[in-house]
Length: 420
Picture 1 (cartoon, rainbow, N blue to C red):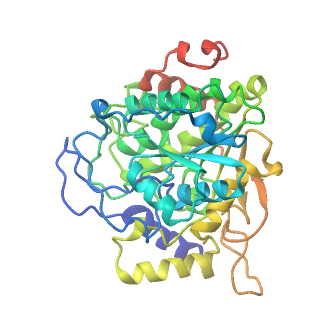
Picture 2: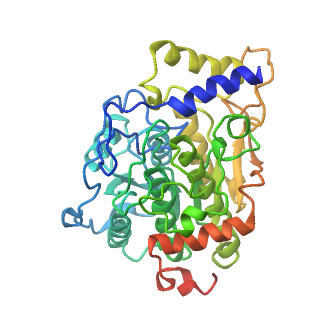
């Protein structure tokens, strides 16, 4: 059973997405899936179309005009930012939070027109959200977003931040690059969010009971089936790539040759390490609850739209009835929203999971759906990071190198970087 699982999952990890055209080194014209976490990504109904990377992901001259008077719109509700909120997990999470009536949601997305459209299509309550431009593949866009967010909300603090957006490019033969010259998976999934998080800590520290959640993945945790049995394995090494600055032509954190599937896994390790470092450095002083979570495997994601018809039919059934790792997009969104809303989730530094956390394949249950593999159902619980993720020495190195790579100054950080 374990060998069968590893074989099928390896087909996903190594060839879950097939580019539609060849790409020469230096070009930026490969299709990419964006705006949702992998394994919990864009829904088939939302993004069956291709998106090709332009020469530049973000043009500063086309900066979005700041929205103002947000305080009147937000009212007494708590303010929450969700990255990648125009599709998949991010969209479902934003919808759940908006419908509670307790939260005003900022949908931080690459495509604001799409975000407006899907919010209406999904029945977001009127006046419960606003869309804002955020291109995580461009550090200037991240800073512009933060400035626009502060202009919108004025003096009131940001209550919650959900870092969900991600790209997944497992079959790229050569790396794609962000506008700043970083490999795309690491640049968007980790570095863009790393800068965003650090620019907003000071603001969130002013809020009562603030929470920040960065979506993790079993693929970055080697103590799980998906992370420990499926090649390639996440491994930052001694961060030789980061030490060299992490920019083109350096494409991997460990400095080794490019491997698309591993680049994604390494980026998720960095995501989870960032949460641990934020908790260690800032929780006691700010009171912010920093956490990560694994939402389960959304096997019907559009990430697999390039797979053969038989695979798209077999994989969801396999994850649902054999491994027990399957979870619907809607339930995954409820899980992520729970981390922000539930009183059970007020502990900082936690990696949240449900239904076994995917450390084994599912166990038989009377309803025919295996339990215990992180799939549908089950109660939320505190999971464990792998030893690689919880390595404090490597995490500190990752933090220091990331600061340099994104150009983050002490002045921009919480309390001027005095808690570093």
